[in-house]
Length: 256
Image (cartoon, rainbow, N blue to C red; front, side, top):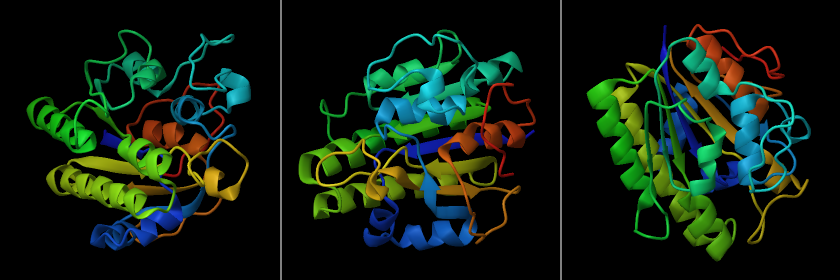
Protein backbone atom coordinates (compact mmCIF):
# COMPACT_ATOMS: atom_id res chain seq x y z
CA UNK A 1 0.00 0.00 0.00
CA UNK A 2 1.39 3.35 -1.07
CA UNK A 3 0.98 6.48 1.01
CA UNK A 4 -0.02 9.75 -0.67
CA UNK A 5 0.50 13.48 -0.19
CA UNK A 6 -1.98 15.68 -2.09
CA UNK A 7 -0.97 19.32 -2.51
CA UNK A 8 -3.52 21.85 -3.80
CA UNK A 9 -2.19 25.26 -4.91
CA UNK A 10 -5.27 27.47 -5.02
CA UNK A 11 -5.76 29.40 -8.25
CA UNK A 12 -2.61 28.20 -10.04
CA UNK A 13 -2.98 28.58 -13.79
CA UNK A 14 -0.85 26.39 -16.09
CA UNK A 15 0.65 29.41 -17.84
CA UNK A 16 1.40 30.93 -14.44
CA UNK A 17 3.14 27.69 -13.45
CA UNK A 18 5.40 28.05 -16.49
CA UNK A 19 5.82 31.84 -16.29
CA UNK A 20 6.91 31.92 -12.64
CA UNK A 21 10.34 30.63 -13.81
CA UNK A 22 10.89 28.52 -10.72
CA UNK A 23 13.52 25.89 -11.69
CA UNK A 24 11.51 23.20 -9.94
CA UNK A 25 8.64 23.68 -12.41
CA UNK A 26 10.71 22.06 -15.16
CA UNK A 27 11.80 19.34 -12.74
CA UNK A 28 8.17 18.59 -11.84
CA UNK A 29 7.34 17.93 -15.49
CA UNK A 30 10.41 15.70 -15.81
CA UNK A 31 9.62 13.48 -12.80
CA UNK A 32 5.81 13.24 -13.08
CA UNK A 33 2.98 12.13 -15.28
CA UNK A 34 1.29 15.47 -15.80
CA UNK A 35 -1.07 17.70 -17.70
CA UNK A 36 -1.15 21.44 -18.25
CA UNK A 37 -4.65 21.10 -19.71
CA UNK A 38 -6.59 19.57 -16.82
CA UNK A 39 -10.23 20.53 -16.40
CA UNK A 40 -11.90 21.71 -13.24
CA UNK A 41 -15.63 21.99 -12.58
CA UNK A 42 -18.08 24.85 -12.92
CA UNK A 43 -18.51 27.06 -11.01
CA UNK A 44 -14.72 27.40 -10.86
CA UNK A 45 -14.77 28.49 -7.22
CA UNK A 46 -12.65 27.16 -4.34
CA UNK A 47 -15.13 25.20 -2.22
CA UNK A 48 -17.12 23.65 -5.10
CA UNK A 49 -13.87 22.65 -6.82
CA UNK A 50 -12.41 21.04 -3.71
CA UNK A 51 -15.67 19.24 -2.98
CA UNK A 52 -15.44 17.79 -6.48
CA UNK A 53 -11.75 17.01 -5.98
CA UNK A 54 -12.52 14.96 -2.87
CA UNK A 55 -15.91 13.50 -3.84
CA UNK A 56 -15.33 12.87 -7.58
CA UNK A 57 -18.69 14.29 -8.63
CA UNK A 58 -19.54 17.68 -10.18
CA UNK A 59 -21.26 20.46 -8.21
CA UNK A 60 -24.67 19.59 -9.62
CA UNK A 61 -24.37 16.32 -7.69
CA UNK A 62 -22.74 17.41 -4.42
CA UNK A 63 -24.77 20.64 -4.34
CA UNK A 64 -22.00 23.08 -3.31
CA UNK A 65 -22.06 25.92 -5.83
CA UNK A 66 -20.58 28.76 -3.74
CA UNK A 67 -18.00 29.08 -0.98
CA UNK A 68 -20.75 28.46 1.57
CA UNK A 69 -21.11 24.84 2.70
CA UNK A 70 -24.53 23.23 2.86
CA UNK A 71 -25.12 19.56 3.78
CA UNK A 72 -25.38 17.23 0.81
CA UNK A 73 -28.95 16.40 -0.18
CA UNK A 74 -27.74 12.91 -1.17
CA UNK A 75 -24.73 12.10 1.05
CA UNK A 76 -21.75 10.27 -0.39
CA UNK A 77 -18.32 9.44 0.94
CA UNK A 78 -15.45 11.66 -0.03
CA UNK A 79 -11.83 10.58 -0.07
CA UNK A 80 -11.31 11.23 3.65
CA UNK A 81 -14.36 9.15 4.59
CA UNK A 82 -13.40 6.34 2.22
CA UNK A 83 -9.92 6.24 3.71
CA UNK A 84 -11.36 6.03 7.21
CA UNK A 85 -13.63 3.20 6.08
CA UNK A 86 -10.49 1.25 5.15
CA UNK A 87 -8.73 2.17 8.43
CA UNK A 88 -6.28 4.66 6.96
CA UNK A 89 -5.04 7.71 8.88
CA UNK A 90 -5.44 11.14 7.27
CA UNK A 91 -4.03 14.59 7.99
CA UNK A 92 -5.01 18.01 6.62
CA UNK A 93 -3.16 21.35 6.72
CA UNK A 94 -5.00 24.31 5.27
CA UNK A 95 -4.97 28.11 5.08
CA UNK A 96 -8.62 28.86 4.28
CA UNK A 97 -11.08 28.06 7.03
CA UNK A 98 -14.18 27.03 4.99
CA UNK A 99 -12.14 24.18 3.53
CA UNK A 100 -12.70 22.26 6.78
CA UNK A 101 -15.93 20.95 5.26
CA UNK A 102 -14.20 18.79 2.64
CA UNK A 103 -13.90 16.24 5.47
CA UNK A 104 -16.65 15.09 7.79
CA UNK A 105 -16.15 15.21 11.55
CA UNK A 106 -13.92 12.41 12.87
CA UNK A 107 -12.47 11.67 9.41
CA UNK A 108 -9.09 13.21 10.29
CA UNK A 109 -6.48 12.05 12.75
CA UNK A 110 -4.37 15.23 12.44
CA UNK A 111 -5.16 18.74 11.21
CA UNK A 112 -4.09 22.37 11.48
CA UNK A 113 -5.51 25.64 10.16
CA UNK A 114 -3.65 28.95 9.83
CA UNK A 115 -5.32 32.21 8.78
CA UNK A 116 -3.45 33.44 5.73
CA UNK A 117 -4.02 37.12 6.58
CA UNK A 118 -2.96 36.70 10.21
CA UNK A 119 0.68 35.97 9.43
CA UNK A 120 3.18 36.14 6.57
CA UNK A 121 4.21 33.06 4.60
CA UNK A 122 1.25 30.97 5.72
CA UNK A 123 1.87 28.38 3.00
CA UNK A 124 5.43 27.85 4.20
CA UNK A 125 4.27 27.54 7.81
CA UNK A 126 1.62 24.99 6.85
CA UNK A 127 4.24 23.06 4.89
CA UNK A 128 6.44 23.06 7.99
CA UNK A 129 3.58 21.69 10.10
CA UNK A 130 2.73 19.01 7.55
CA UNK A 131 6.36 17.93 7.24
CA UNK A 132 6.78 17.76 11.00
CA UNK A 133 3.70 15.54 11.26
CA UNK A 134 4.81 13.30 8.39
CA UNK A 135 8.24 12.87 9.97
CA UNK A 136 6.71 12.06 13.35
CA UNK A 137 3.64 9.99 12.50
CA UNK A 138 3.81 8.91 8.82
CA UNK A 139 0.06 9.38 8.12
CA UNK A 140 -1.30 7.29 5.27
CA UNK A 141 -2.71 10.36 3.50
CA UNK A 142 -1.79 14.03 3.87
CA UNK A 143 -3.63 16.97 2.28
CA UNK A 144 -1.65 20.22 2.14
CA UNK A 145 -3.55 23.25 0.85
CA UNK A 146 -1.80 26.48 -0.12
CA UNK A 147 -3.96 29.60 -0.42
CA UNK A 148 -1.58 32.52 -0.99
CA UNK A 149 -1.47 32.12 -4.78
CA UNK A 150 -5.20 32.80 -4.89
CA UNK A 151 -5.70 35.33 -2.08
CA UNK A 152 -2.48 37.35 -1.99
CA UNK A 153 -1.58 36.81 -5.64
CA UNK A 154 -4.67 36.64 -7.82
CA UNK A 155 -7.33 38.49 -5.81
CA UNK A 156 -5.06 41.15 -4.32
CA UNK A 157 -2.92 41.85 -7.40
CA UNK A 158 -4.42 40.03 -10.40
CA UNK A 159 -3.82 36.72 -12.12
CA UNK A 160 -0.49 36.71 -14.02
CA UNK A 161 0.73 39.80 -12.13
CA UNK A 162 4.34 39.70 -10.84
CA UNK A 163 2.99 39.21 -7.31
CA UNK A 164 0.86 36.28 -8.44
CA UNK A 165 3.81 34.63 -10.17
CA UNK A 166 5.94 35.14 -7.06
CA UNK A 167 3.28 33.32 -5.00
CA UNK A 168 3.33 30.38 -7.41
CA UNK A 169 7.12 30.25 -7.20
CA UNK A 170 6.97 30.25 -3.40
CA UNK A 171 4.39 27.45 -3.49
CA UNK A 172 6.64 25.39 -5.76
CA UNK A 173 9.50 25.90 -3.33
CA UNK A 174 7.28 24.29 -0.69
CA UNK A 175 6.40 21.43 -3.04
CA UNK A 176 10.11 20.87 -3.64
CA UNK A 177 10.76 20.66 0.11
CA UNK A 178 8.06 18.02 0.50
CA UNK A 179 9.29 16.02 -2.48
CA UNK A 180 12.92 16.10 -1.40
CA UNK A 181 12.02 14.96 2.12
CA UNK A 182 9.33 12.36 1.38
CA UNK A 183 9.32 11.57 -2.35
CA UNK A 184 10.86 8.16 -1.69
CA UNK A 185 8.14 7.23 0.82
CA UNK A 186 5.03 8.88 -0.61
CA UNK A 187 3.33 9.33 -3.97
CA UNK A 188 2.88 13.09 -4.39
CA UNK A 189 -0.01 14.64 -6.30
CA UNK A 190 0.10 18.38 -7.04
CA UNK A 191 -2.90 20.19 -8.50
CA UNK A 192 -4.80 23.45 -8.62
CA UNK A 193 -8.51 23.79 -7.93
CA UNK A 194 -9.19 26.47 -10.55
CA UNK A 195 -7.41 29.24 -12.44
CA UNK A 196 -8.41 32.89 -12.67
CA UNK A 197 -8.45 36.07 -14.73
CA UNK A 198 -8.07 39.73 -13.86
CA UNK A 199 -8.74 39.60 -10.09
CA UNK A 200 -11.47 36.97 -10.09
CA UNK A 201 -12.55 33.47 -11.16
CA UNK A 202 -15.69 31.36 -11.29
CA UNK A 203 -16.60 31.58 -14.99
CA UNK A 204 -16.47 29.16 -17.91
CA UNK A 205 -13.44 31.03 -19.30
CA UNK A 206 -10.49 28.73 -20.13
CA UNK A 207 -8.33 30.85 -17.82
CA UNK A 208 -10.63 29.85 -14.93
CA UNK A 209 -11.36 26.25 -15.94
CA UNK A 210 -7.90 24.93 -16.92
CA UNK A 211 -5.56 23.56 -14.25
CA UNK A 212 -2.17 21.83 -14.08
CA UNK A 213 -1.93 18.41 -12.41
CA UNK A 214 1.17 16.35 -11.52
CA UNK A 215 1.43 12.73 -10.31
CA UNK A 216 4.83 11.77 -8.91
CA UNK A 217 5.51 8.22 -7.74
CA UNK A 218 6.25 4.62 -8.67
CA UNK A 219 2.86 4.14 -10.33
CA UNK A 220 3.39 7.03 -12.75
CA UNK A 221 5.64 7.24 -15.79
CA UNK A 222 8.09 10.14 -15.54
CA UNK A 223 7.68 12.79 -18.22
CA UNK A 224 4.39 11.40 -19.55
CA UNK A 225 1.85 13.96 -20.73
CA UNK A 226 -1.68 12.97 -19.68
CA UNK A 227 -4.72 13.66 -21.85
CA UNK A 228 -8.37 14.30 -20.96
CA UNK A 229 -7.73 14.67 -17.23
CA UNK A 230 -10.34 16.07 -14.85
CA UNK A 231 -10.27 17.18 -11.24
CA UNK A 232 -12.80 14.36 -10.71
CA UNK A 233 -9.98 11.87 -11.38
CA UNK A 234 -7.95 12.82 -8.31
CA UNK A 235 -9.87 10.90 -5.62
CA UNK A 236 -10.15 7.67 -7.68
CA UNK A 237 -6.44 7.87 -8.54
CA UNK A 238 -5.42 8.28 -4.90
CA UNK A 239 -7.74 5.46 -3.84
CA UNK A 240 -6.17 3.20 -6.48
CA UNK A 241 -2.62 4.07 -5.41
CA UNK A 242 -3.55 3.41 -1.78
CA UNK A 243 -5.24 0.08 -2.64
CA UNK A 244 -8.69 1.01 -1.35
CA UNK A 245 -12.01 0.85 -3.16
CA UNK A 246 -13.50 4.07 -4.52
CA UNK A 247 -16.95 5.09 -3.34
CA UNK A 248 -19.52 3.68 -5.79
CA UNK A 249 -20.88 7.16 -6.60
CA UNK A 250 -17.55 8.56 -7.80
CA UNK A 251 -17.53 9.56 -11.47
CA UNK A 252 -13.82 10.08 -12.14
CA UNK A 253 -11.26 7.56 -13.38
CA UNK A 254 -7.98 6.35 -11.88
CA UNK A 255 -4.91 7.56 -13.73
CA UNK A 256 -2.61 5.09 -11.96
